[in-house]
Structure formats: C-alpha cells, structure tokens
Length: 100
Length: 189
Image (cartoon, rainbow over all chains, first blue to last red; front, side, top):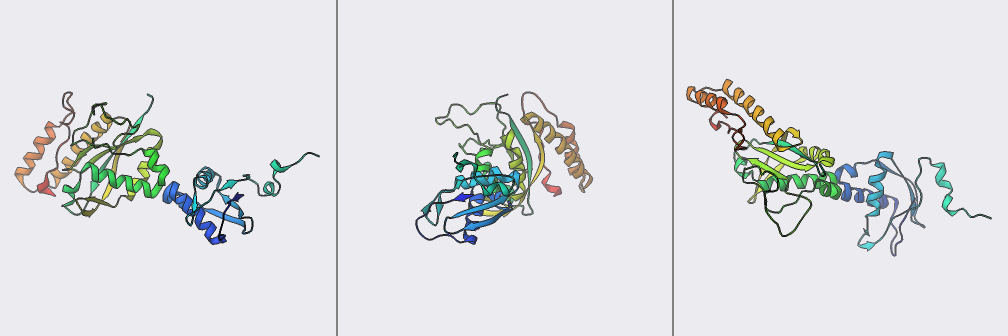
C-alpha cells in the first residue's frame, strides 16, 4: 500500500496511475515507464492504494516512488506500508498487531 | 582491479555526408548522454557516469591518467575516449556493471547535433571490450576487412594500389598506438 499525505485536491485513480508512471519515467526512463504497474485498489479518502508489479520491477518501483517529491507543485511523500507476493497477506498488517 | 571499465566501440553511420564534419567528441557524448537519459532516466545517467571535464581526445587515445591534475576530482571520467571523424569510429567508456544500460541506449541515438546543425544518423555497435587495447586490436582487424571489401568494389586502378598499400602496412606497433587505424578511401564511397 502507498499513502501520500496531501493538503488540497485529491488525485483520482487515473491521476494516481499517471503519477506513478511519471515517477518511474523520471528515475528509470522509458524502460521504467514501460514497467507494467497495475493499481488494484485505490481509496481517495485515505489516499492509499494497492499496486501490483512484477517482482523483478519491485526495486525500480519502490525507488521511484521514494524519490517522488512533488504532485502538482505540492510536496508529497509515498509511504510503503507493506509488500508481499500474496494479495491475501495485505489484508492484515502484522506491524499493527497488538498483543492482548 | 577496483573499478573495471567496459569500452564500447561503435561506428557512426549516416546517409548525409556532411555528418562527418559534425562528428566530434562533445556532440557524440551529448547525444549518447541524451539517449541514456531518455531510456534509463536519472538512474541510468548516474550509473553510466557520463560527464564532461572538457578532456575528450582530439583523436588520440590516452593511456592511463594522462589528463594531469584537475581541480575538481570526479569519480567519473569523460565517456568518449577516442574518435575518428574519417571513419566515424567512436570508443565509449562506462563502468563494467552498467555497460548493458549504455549498450541498450545506443540504438536510441538518432541524430548528432553540433554548431546548431542536426544530422540524422545511427550508431552501429562493433565491439565491447574490457580494455582499450582489445578494442584497438579488433578495430585493426575490422578496418582490414573493410578495406578488403572496398578493394572488391574498386573501379579505379590507382585506388586499388592505394588500398593494397594500406592493407599491407596496417599493424599495431608499440610506440604509436594509432598506427593501426586506416582511413577510409573516400573516393570509393
């Protein structure tokens, strides 16, 4: 999942995907922009999404998102909450588990 | 060796004969750097460590650190090590770990630009080697083969003799590292 803290207008799904692809293009060029990235879910309220990418492209995607600083001239940041090869594992975040 | 390099030998091919005078180290280096930036982004640019300190050769390959003391010490070095405007031969240098980035970006070089003039061209990769010496040896053999091809297409008897003389005299001598490269016979083109 990615989360971006933002002040003003929220990006839509298409704009979010465009943001991801442009981050890849900046850091990794046309080769990076051609990496097939899918947005599986996107919540506009919390600005979090689940992205799917081929495992060999994880490093490129993660580094591109980390270095992305601006969205429409506003500062923003991507925070990676969880990565996993299985979609089911993303439903529960083991970091947030609390011992009773 | 701590920091190994790979040397990529390529040839500038262009339909426009005026492109020959446009071939200079800065123009070629800029074009290659552009292509890498487009294809591989900032990461690729940084990996291939292409920068200019203004020390590109005027046609002579430099041995070792012949550039002398420089005020700024950059880890990267000029990428165009050797250039021959007559044959359009260019020798590029990059780090061993990222030579694939450089080689894959070379087909994306579409034009050379210098002095506000643009000429469409493409780079034809001839050889990738670990040292300048291996590239030189390959270049000598390649040029010899090219001269033989030119010999077959020769129409003029005088040109034939000229080429035969060049063929017999091409070799790699120790004191001058450039004696192996022969110029193309422009009359037969």
